[in-house]
Length: 448
Ligand SMILES: NC(=O)c1ccc[n+]([C@@H]2O[C@H](COP(=O)([O-])OP(=O)(O)OC[C@H]3O[C@@H](n4cnc5c(N)ncnc54)[C@H](O)[C@@H]3O)[C@@H](O)[C@H]2O)c1
Image 1 (cartoon, rainbow, N blue to C red):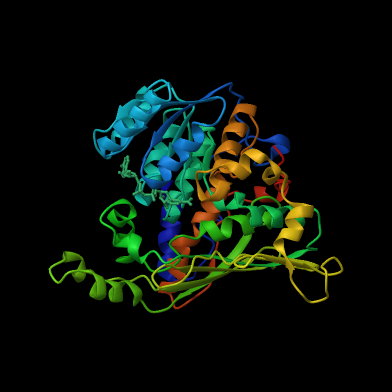
Image 2 (cartoon, rainbow, N blue to C red; image 1 turned 90 degrees about the vertical axis):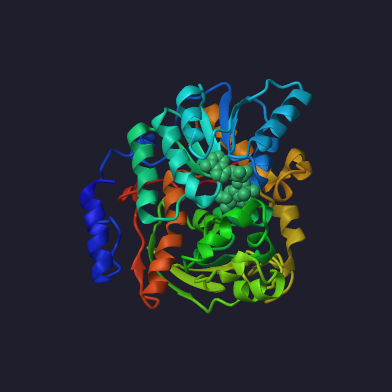
């Protein structure tokens, strides 16, 4: 990021004016080229996609398993700070009769060596949050496309760094938001694009998942995720809920986020867990958490629509992403899944079961038998997102989610923290497209 933008950020934050971050600055680089000067970047098509995968823990292993089922994929290198995780995968490749990927296990920056010396098309990472940006930047700087797990970044500077690097080096930088591919969210996108919900007015979404056990685990996410709760207070994981709503509302493609307010409640859940589950001599009993158990953020778009986003991971509760997409003619809701469209639903003012709408308006990607039987990754949506990414790269078409989506959806994290820290004051949301969202067509009903 250039120094003028950094200065601008510092001054506006210090003045507490919550102004548009970077919005008034001229573009640092030209936009990614696309049809008609839009933001729909295409890279040259490729017959096969040579991949280096970084971070083969829980979610990374699920991606690797999916990628192994796809045509035109070669996984050439695997990287993890735990060597056994890589050797386990190498053995599995041998068992499957696939060429064994090279191992990169010399510590937390060994992905740099992977990016520098391997001939790859894509570096895909599913590492802890602090590594997403360094890995994506190393990939692009070494001539590779980048794909990352969510959120892509958790500082405003890092969001800009991803955008500016992708633009400058003309590379894809895709955040893998799998919830955009879940069946309900895709049904809603399909209904919205067909105009059956009318003009979209409102969305509700969130990440509401009791992670207490996971945060205190001595492996996997327990090794890194709880630490964020000791120093950050806001919506730390906004993209699962927000991504699909933003996509339906055509954010970055004819519409844009305008501003946001955010509030957090008290922080009690992790403290209670500490006391009730950890032995007296466990050092983790001394940790102090700042993350409010429930964070509520409200976003307004340039078209005046409202979006309510929650983050609720420290209290007992069944899983939900809430999900409401509401227009002038009807709405889709999640958890439980149901639909109401005026004049089309069975009875006036009464929900239809979602199955009725799946039968008549299932998204085309969900009608494939392959998806229905995909066993790995959150009921099929992870397989779909991996398949779509590989398809787009092989065809040389724009990816469903691009670097502007990665930045716009992820920046809700740090700017919710800003608003919480300033008594819920409104903050303008940065336009990472620098106005070019106006000329970009909405994502259509992606069919294959
Ligand atoms: N989309 C989803 O539904 C979903 C679900 C779970 C996790 N995630 C995301 O996936 C990412 C990973 O989460 P997880 O649950 O798999 O966590 P995890 O802890 O199980 O896996 C992370 C892996 O990265 C490795 N690692 C850590 N630092 C590294 C480094 N510098 N270089 C190479 N490897 C490194 C760890 O050893 C581990 O194997 C996170 O960003 C998380 O938010 C997404």
